[in-house]
Length: 191
Length: 191
DNA sequence: CCGCAGAGTTAAGCCTGCTTAACTCAAAAT
DNA sequence: ATTTTGAGTTAAGCAGGCTTAACTCTGCGG
Image (tube, rainbow over all chains, first blue to last red; front, side, top):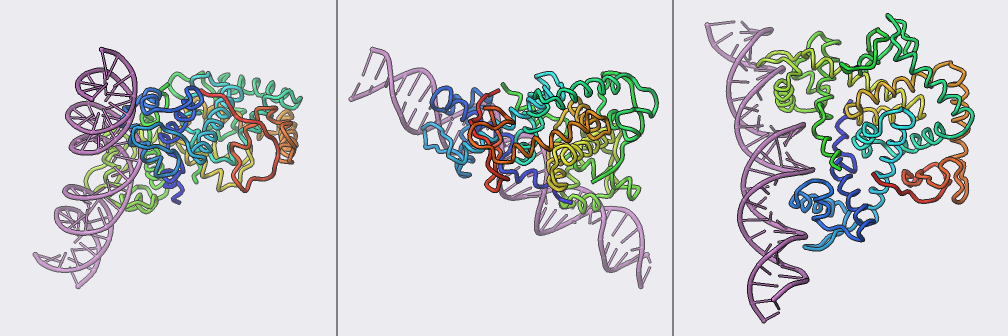
């Protein structure tokens, strides 16, 4: 009943994950990462970078000495790589499988990339790879899913949404400008 | 290049989402939500609840007067319902589609429930419903996906992972105690 | 060899979300 | 009617991440 508190005990916060990614990509691109480069890339002040670097250093994720450059430790690189991989997989999942526009996909991936467990990510990767593949079952499914979505979005009247069958949650996610009508019934359940 | 900063501009923080859910479920179960109930349910101090309530009130998500009960506004209820629906859909996706154990699924869903956009959630819902359905294409796919995972986990030697084909990211998510060998090749890409 | 620009740092402050400690209040028990 | 109790509140403090302002280095031009 207190799972939710572990949010703040994740090994990386959202900010940390992005600092690590910035250091990783700057190192790749320029050979090293300076405080100014990081500040520019992330759109924060240099002072902010300095203090975050200190925090990452005490966690053993970067090496840094006064007025010097910043580089990832082994552990830091591991986490940066993992986060980048997560982002890539999730972005692909959101665009190619869920069919979101690229910018929406990128945004969602960015929000959750550091929060999804490695076990889930492995499965996300597999599912995405499989669903994108030329495997006949995958092609067949993609076709069927397209049809399914047409039905769902197509304004099915009353409580007879063929997708969710009486437990349709779609309207819970409906913003005002949503696609069309369709479905009814109330949510429910708890955890 | 600053998408990541919008993390803190989401309409709900992780904490807020859970306070709203607590109020919603207590109201369902007991008829009303007191500060103590909320504190107990969330495992925080009553003082913490008071201050969060104040913050939610100024955002127009709850009604509350000194020494009184707490209730959701229309907007608060909308957000609570949406978050609960997201959690339910994601949990189902993680267990039934990705095949995670229930507690891992619940944990991951809890972490991201408030961060995934409504548009994505609608698609998550459709995909999950479709993949769980008796539709022949779905049944066929589930079978094929099980086989696929066996291959992936089954220790395919060298760079010839048939799943990811030269861009296998699986090892990026490998914790030390990971299932088995399999795949090679390096990650890459950036956003 | 010196000085000056700019990279980097510290200091102080703000906001969020939590804590504990100490207070106030409402209402039940006597 | 008064006391007691426990629910609710405020106050003060801490940690994370940011800001601006003001400082200190480093190192290049002259």
